[in-house]
Length: 421
Image 1 (cartoon, one colour):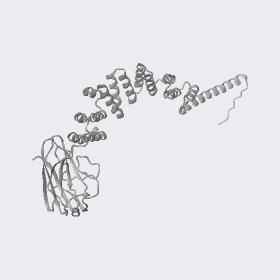
Image 2 (tube, rainbow, N blue to C red):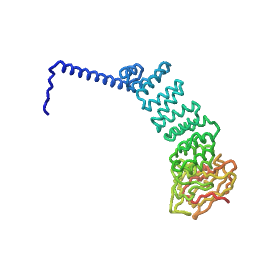
Image 3 (cartoon, rainbow, N blue to C red):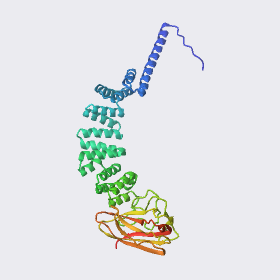
Image 4 (tube, rainbow, N blue to C red):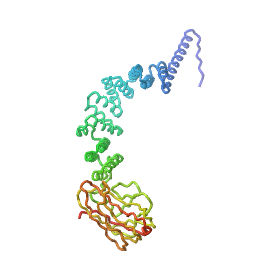
């Protein structure tokens, strides 16, 4: 490219060049000053640095916002007033930034100006109607303004987007409506996350029937997503010995219902036994390693498998328990039956027990296991107590300190069932 020369051979041209140079220098200085002021906002840990940033870039909303945030941490009244002024200045410079208006709303309410706070937050909502933090903050201000219905409407909108607001929404509804369950229900709305939180809250108050009914309103696929909350509710029900309600919650946490009233789950041992993490309504193994327990298809009374319990000269005090809790109707009568084969050798007594799941009181027991080359039935009549809706089945061995109580051999178990006589 050819080089072109411009001759500066007159006073006018020299004056024009000087003017251009001055303009460039001034512009560079302004840009540098603005850049330096903006850069200081990331390092403004105290008011002096924040003030310097504002003085260098007074037209930058970020410097005013940073100054406001720094002073917001102070307990001094003068700093609080300056913080609010800086937030409002930032909003005036950048009127379409919803985060700044959110901060203005918070600062105005802190200063006692709830009307002003509501206006600022409504502006933030206009700019970001789908942003949950804005809706939540606006709803809280409205509640404190006495605009209860509008406030809960905003908070419901926030919780429908961000599930972290579900528990606070339920708590707020409880605080405002105390024992008015219908009003609480209307206030929190119908989103699945909120219904799960409400169910958990009701369970925490030991209102288990209401907790169960609330959980039933959650669609099945959403119920599975809230499984952690559901398991917490299930745990509360089990702790309070509400086994019928707990069984129904446990079913709602399955793709299809698994448990039934007065019915042993997988009594034929077709689905295996989990080593850990089983529901209380499934077969549960106790701690320890003896006896060994496994499924086998070599011996079975019905179906494809039976349960094989292997004793390898197991001492009298070593016994790995096998148990399951079943929800039942109070005051009814049931019959326990179980089939077994055995070649064990021991003086110890091994049999099935049925206990009240509420207080572990023994309700019934089968005769002891004996050597049996063919499948043999054990059974026992079970009177269900009138004050408890759960029973626990367990394979039990009596304490036996004698040397002859060491157990050796195999026990096959199949088709454990509860029936109505």
